[in-house]
Image: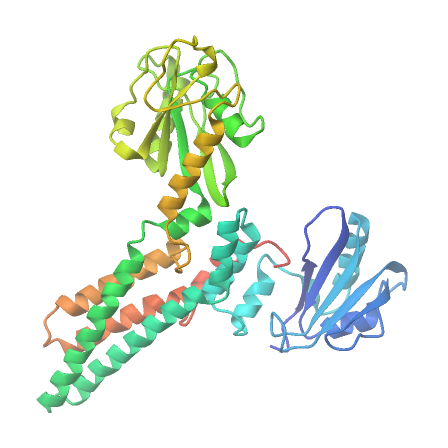
Length: 444
């Protein structure tokens, strides 16, 4: 590790701010302080220092310097932090000065976290949770990311992996003692018992309705309906801002417009779509309707919006077939005569705000019901689900195949163990690292 370059980056948010934090990690982190802001503070202590350019000696700023000696650091390397005033010119000059020192270079996206993983501070699932925590927009997302970062999901998978290793060792025992049938049969029976119990536990975890991914990415709701029923107005009312253009002219919305909402601590993604009608004029409108129906198929829920002042237009079959996955809502109740009754579903006015709070509460309840018990560690990424699926398939092969092919059964368990290990990085995952860490922000 000694010949690794020392990396540095702005670890606070970019742009002008009161304070900016520049982080340095690597074997030369201490030397950076010695040359730019001496004397080096005591380990785990901070000190106010004048920060100078290492070549010209020009004063760049006066700030707080923190020195953290490895290996008891986030990356397991020596770390220096420069807490400077947050003006863009100051940050730029400090970064440029550090970069002028030999052996120092700007960090790549996610490189601090990657070093923490490679140095054994965290596993791969915990590293992904860090990115989720940075991206969290709601309380529920924050809590889920924190639980995963603390190791709740990793502990679950590592426990299953230990059981798989035990089952594998029993199969290996049966192979080694194949000439002693009593010993071999007992070992195989025990390995099958472990595999059956484990298969049931993983299947229950796998068949969770994608609640972890939904919480991480957002409960997706599509606004659909005939043209000019007020879908864009409803989107703006739910978002409490002008997110979509509103016009009395039909066909104003041609593409899907998404807005992310925080409803009672849960992430909800609302999509405004093109109006649906039988007589579609022109290829652009037909493409808009096609995208509307595609969004409705992919969404967790659909709101079919109608105009309360005219007879309700029935949704097309692709939407109506969703059954309870569709909520009928009548808009424009502010235009109704006092004596006129409305539909049997929810009635709102996107213009006056009547009924909007009730609709928001209904969406939050639907999202909470769909996400379910967020206290148990859920699957949060497609990568996890893919490896769990591979693990289940290998266990199914092990349990259903001919017992006499004992060497092949040992390979089934090895494949299952390997698949679980890839989730947390307990096995060789070099091909995954670039994909995982490249999605981080620089400085994390």
